[in-house]
Image (tube, rainbow, N blue to C red):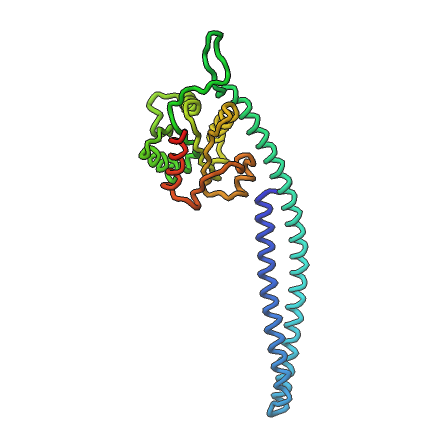
Length: 274
């Protein structure tokens, strides 16, 4: 099975062969130009010795051109073989990545299904717990993020939302000494009306942020209302589609085209409108 390291090596080899072919082509062109110049000047030489010297130099340049052409032809054969190996490796890695993506989607769906029961809204009546009610929310939004995105996006966004009167669950502000991390996050998820998910390359590499996402997906399914408010950070549409097709369908804010102030204004509007 092909690996990314193998692909990188093959691509480097292909690039190197292209460069070598370009060098040999330059040598061919230079030798042919010198050959032509000497053959043209030989008949006009002032002495027979000078003419013979011109012809001899032209013959030498011709041999040099032929040698460079042979080296170029050999390199082109190597290039064709290397490109074939690269195409095969790319196809193998593509199939491997497709299989891994399918497995990841299945795992995400399984985790979301397992978490759905935990976050299904319930109310207590005469006969006990009754499904279908919405619990009272302590927070307006829960911010889920990878630790690598904390300083650039998560923390300043949380501060901007608080300035706009939004009640925010954010780990730096909400956790206190002695809090159990998992239980505190569970309470934050269950007690927040919206989940702001900062999607980034680091987010999709981490288990913990995706576990939080599973909980929000379960809550959205159970309530039938909009819960997830995605933010794309350093991602394209294709990146999100490759990592999570379901998230790619949701309308998202994007740090690539919006300032954090604009993003905070959008989220605050949604949070205060409901």
